[in-house]
Image 1 (cartoon, rainbow, N blue to C red):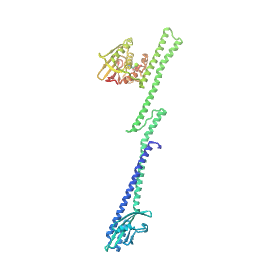
Image 2 (image 1 turned 90 degrees about the vertical axis):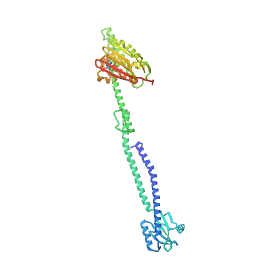
Image 3 (image 1 turned 135 degrees about the vertical axis):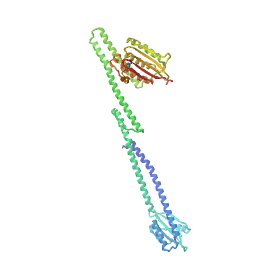
Image 4 (image 1 turned 90 degrees about the horizontal axis):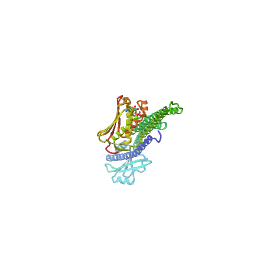
Amino acid sequence: MKLNSVIFKLGATILFLQLIILIPLGYIILQLLLNYSVNQTESQLVKLSEKYATQVHHLDDPENLQLLDHLTDMTDTSAVIIDQNGEMIFETNWDQSITDQILTTNQKQQLADGNTVIEEYTNNGSTYLKVAQPISDDSGERASVVLFSSFGLISSSIHNIVILVILASLGAVALAIGFTIFISKKLGAPLIAMEKVAKQIAEKKDFSLRVDYKANDEIGSLATAVNHLSQTLERYQTNRNEFFSNITHELKTPLTYVKGYANAVRHEMYQSESEKDEFLEIIENEADHISNLMDDLMDLSKIEEGKIDLNKESFDINNLAEEMVRRSHIRATQKGLDLYAVTPPHPVKMMADKSRMEQILTNLVENAVRYTENGEIRVEISENDKNVEVFVQDTGIGIKKEDIPFLFERFYRVDKSRSRANGGTGLGLSIVKNLVELHEGSIKFDSELNKGTTVKLTFPKFEKED
Ligand SMILES: Nc1ncnc2c1ncn2[C@@H]1O[C@H](COP(=O)(O)OP(=O)(O)O)[C@@H](O)[C@H]1O
Ligand SMILES: [Mg+2]
């Protein structure tokens, strides 16, 4: 794990927070315990001394002294009995290191006044608690009992608690480390996989890698986004490759013709002047074809890059349909076809880019003329509450059902030589579909082989200009 990795930072933060909480908490717990045990010991000593004071009947009775001996042994304390002259008359568990002065003058006075003396002091590095109580026996003789307890005992239990707190802290730290390792595996792995995929894309232009991580969280959606990105790039790359090989192929054919016939004219390989004119006409047609192809390609690339702006205006689509019919009339009559428009008696207004709508209709009417040998071509306009509909219907060669889904692909032609012979580039319907979708419309082909084709365009009516 790298020092600057997110996981390391997360782990360090967890540890830091733990320490911030544990250290003061430990300190507070220790202080509480210390106070508690001091108080406990104090009240224990006070109780003990009071108990003893009430049970003394004869100060010189060995039984009384035995009782004290017994009590101090049980409670692990030391005791001294001082008579009213300040002389020590009894001691148990006593040793000189406990204190240099059993009672101060002040304390003696307190006892003489019948009060209890409580003092916490340090001697020779150890802390002691001293509790003294005035006593008097049945004969009225007065003395004092002084009890001492060392904190040695208390600190040993506190010591245990300190060890417990330290162990608990270590446990918490170990948990934090374990948690960090777990998180690093859980979070780090997909992040590293994403880094690998991104590097592969950027450095090697390899779009085939995917991140194998599915989760309903931010990292999961990031992984999905990365996968989506590489998928899109992969599709884009495949499309581009196909597109380039298609263009090369599409340009090669007319260029071969141009070169061949130009060569024939230069070497005077024609039989007559009229044949020479024929050769030159072929060259002209092929040059036109290349030019058409270039125009279509430019258009398509502009549309696909989103670089065209629609100049929407309100116009009557009936007029446009009639205009289209007039324009293609000559070509249709040359083929013996009947071309006409059917429009409602009232204007059908729509908000659209007029020149782009013209381009759409021209393409569809040209296709209808191109792929119809006899019969008629009908351009119909209709409208309902929601939509404006345009139908281009022919009685031509028709299209097989299985070909229909591919019609909008670039360069897709059902019959390549027929399309070429009629000046088709195979890009018309790709352009049409893009333009229709730019107008938020849809296009649908209905066709039966050898019977004819109907293309239906549907455009939503716009209430307001947008
Ligand atoms: N009205 C139609 N009748 C029969 N086939 C059609 C019709 N319109 C289009 N097609 C088929 O769809 C193909 C693609 O059309 P298009 O993209 O306009 O290319 P092009 O007209 O240049 O060949 C055509 O080559 C043709 O096979
Ligand atoms: Mg076409």
